[in-house]
Length: 314
Image: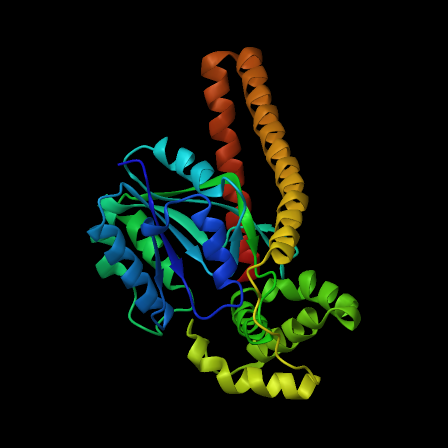
């Protein structure tokens, strides 16, 4: 029951063969499935059905633009197995090529026994730009929590076709407009020597300016990504060969960003320890009764500040 199934969600990404090879080094090949349904809502339904039909307790979903590091599946599964029964899914961290840092993206461990509840909660096709997030939010309202952990799962959006860089960036332009303040300027500064970032900037700007909400459907971007290639004077990349050279490059990426993940994990531990120490010091200082009054007062002050802020905005 503890051996998971793995489902790769694919839309002909350049890294699909390498993604599967890396997973086959961690999970028996017969327990790895690939779904290619479009749009994304259809792929999500296919994943949930595979999980329900399996005898596995947990299902790992991996987008084909993720390249998992060695041991990633077991590391994520170890966290999942430690969760209480109300937790429906666990998500770790990847190094995101476009965001330029660690973030949650492209992988999850799902408890299969809750997928029968999740399946009818998947939004209708094209009704939201975040179908999986919307499904998990609906599950949370029914008492099925999600859990975020510090497991470094791999790298995301590295070595992709230009067309997929465009599509991903277009969607980011509608989902993450805050990136205009910090991430997008770094693309502009580096794009003279990085064609991926030239394409990313074009896709993001097109997404911001689009009058239509993007769907998570690769078929919607064939014409616009082809036009962007022509405008930027780029030729599409060749398929990524699953060979020793590319595998070595990916292994080097994993080693580089694992150190970044270790540092982030250490910072999180230090912050949590500092908070615990501060709370315990206040408890010893005030005693139980005064400490509870102190905490309640802090909460009321925070609520008051938020209400004042909301009033200023209105």
